[in-house]
Image 1 (cartoon, rainbow, N blue to C red):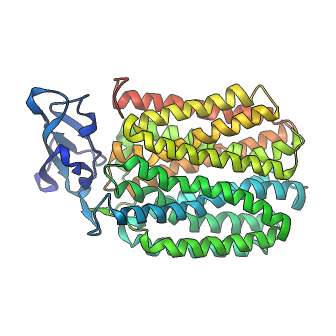
Image 2: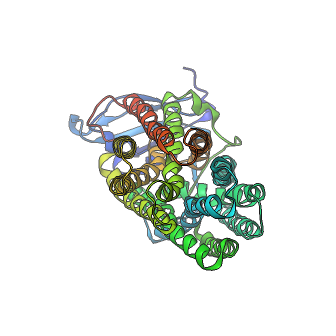
Length: 481
């Protein structure tokens, strides 16, 4: 392969100092026991990264020195003098936690609004039509995320986060005055999704840049904000609707979201930016088979994500004959377990490997739906589904950015996460809308069997792609990847 020397930058550094990530590449010192000697890795722009490794003392347990030949446009520049792993880094994690708690927590709580619209406010509207409010909200967050990732590399993320906070709050306040499903699609759906895309991307991509030693744990803590947000936002939204009515519930939510995210925006900043990039996304990544498999796996994982959150509340009322409050509490429980999953998997990722845990959690999500929810329709089994699926899906969300950072590098992580949001967009289309259509047209809004079967097959498909990716990265079962 010909390599233009003018586009390359040669550096030598010690494997022990953990500074691979400074250049935008995953820390390979943890994989020293699995691979030594010369290695060529194809990077997003289709140039070669040449790594010459020599084992200390002739052993294969540690690398002594490595030499990278790095394409110039993948070199990272420090955006701040603040060091990684320090006090300021934990302040950034706290800011990401709050930003995700509100931006994603509100989206996770849409099941309560779905229940209110479907049973009380718009009883004549179909479940699939109402579900499009939450679906549009999530889809716009994903499509906006593609561009937000690019903007985060070129503009101050603190300002972008603040702009997103204002749009989020304004969208919900405007939605409180809407009296039709169509107008709610525009305000609660489109406008909120647009605003939330900024804290969504920043809060997901920034944590991995600020940590080298505890990258998985720090990312897990930051992303647990979305689960905690979904947990308390679900209960709070249900309580607000009961006491104040839906319009005032939306106004209070909008004001809280806007103020809280504005307050933490000063700490929402990236640590590394790429040396040079004018592209919104690195489309050359599509040539990387690992990335294609990862993208496909995320399509089905995200498609499965929102199904239980959206349908459990109404399922509890229609099938199990429980109260609306009981149904919303089931969503709260699922969000609570997702927090446990995010934190647990985040801690284990540094020891077991994020990709290994992503495979394991996807398998658990598939089993919880196939083995428990498909054949049974009792309170006990639904509780078990809530516990297992909530834990599994929380772990999945937690390690996605860590896998991206370790496999594809840190320098352009915001734009890489943005590109991954394309899979989130497609997954959003393949998730709730078909489930709701099956509930309307096959189950006649009372039989959830076809919808649950569809929901259960989505993590199965995701698992197949993840296993293929795992063996593409390495065929060694014990490898920590």
